[in-house]
Image (cartoon, rainbow, N blue to C red; front, side, top):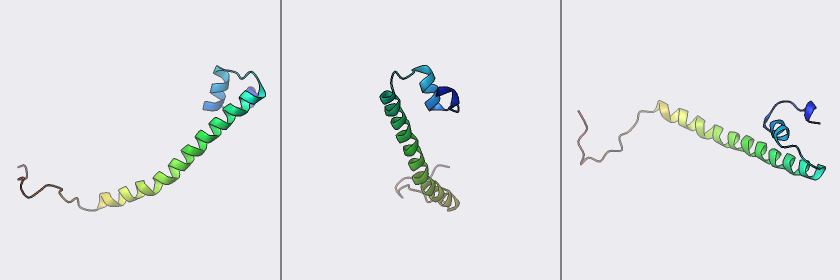
Length: 73
């Protein structure tokens, strides 16, 4: 089975440490699937946040300094 997999972290993992039985293969496959789903979820949730950051960059920055502190020359 390993020979038909395309090169990716999962197949690399199987090359490094082959599974002894089908149950172990299923467990490892489930873990990698969860990792991939988590990566996809994070990418989707970060995309709107990054878009907001890009919009904020276009606005002039307001100084967060207090009036008590003079501006540097």
